Amino acid sequence: MAAAVRLVSERGTTGIPVTDLAEAADVSRRLVYLQFGDRDTLRTEAAIDLVRRELLPRAGDGGDTSEGVAAPARHFAEHRSFYRPMLTGSCAFAMTSTLNKLFGSLNRPAVRELFGDLDQQTADDLSEFIAGGAATLVNNWVIDGADPLAPEDLTNRLRRLAPSPRREAVRPGPGAPVRDG
Image (cartoon, rainbow, N blue to C red):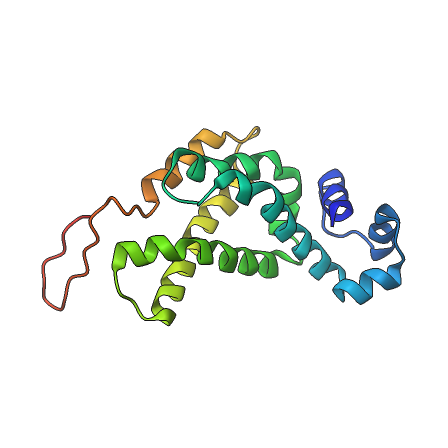
């Protein structure tokens, strides 16, 4: 997986033959196919591994703390040369979908605190919905942002939008006035 991150970053493309990936990892092509099935799965797993190893420990609980909001911006800026081709290549959908599920699961405690007693499906859907919206901002920033990326700009944008247990959660009923939380 480290070889995949390195090669995608160096070459600026996801169009890297399995032979090159296997050679860079000092394994056989057969092992790559046995372990991952195809190169898109390998690259997607490499992205998930990178997030788990480097981003999640830095983000802490992922809450509305300064580090919890700033860590993703710094991580994606630091690894832009990897994520940019990943977000525009053949594995973009699989990677984005997998990361949204991962980040959605991290949102679940904040969603439950903000919105109270939700059934499991609604909590899961809302958590992934929030993760997907944040992912769109991150993706657009990584793909189209000016060089060099300014993590503090994305951090400020995410902080303004991040669900916070300190904000009042309002769930109006039918016909009830809507208040800003």
